[in-house]
Length: 46
Image 1 (cartoon, rainbow, N blue to C red):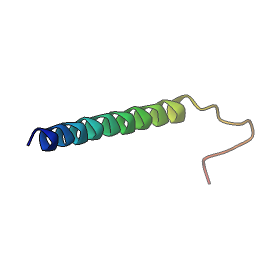
Image 2: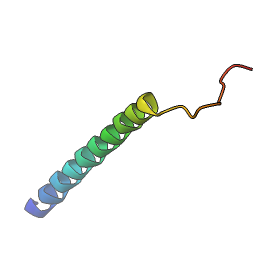
Image 3: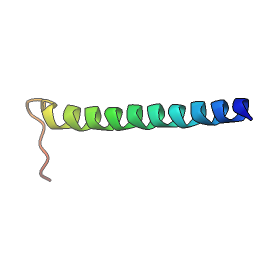
Image 4: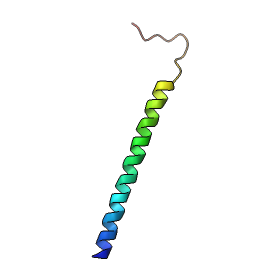
């Protein structure tokens, strides 16, 4: 029974770490998009 609880705890901890990494990656992508320099001569209007 103790082994099962240990495995379950490890799985929950792994899930928490995975979600934290995904959240950090998403935040970094937002910062990259917000601070990305626009090349000269490019136009967003059609």
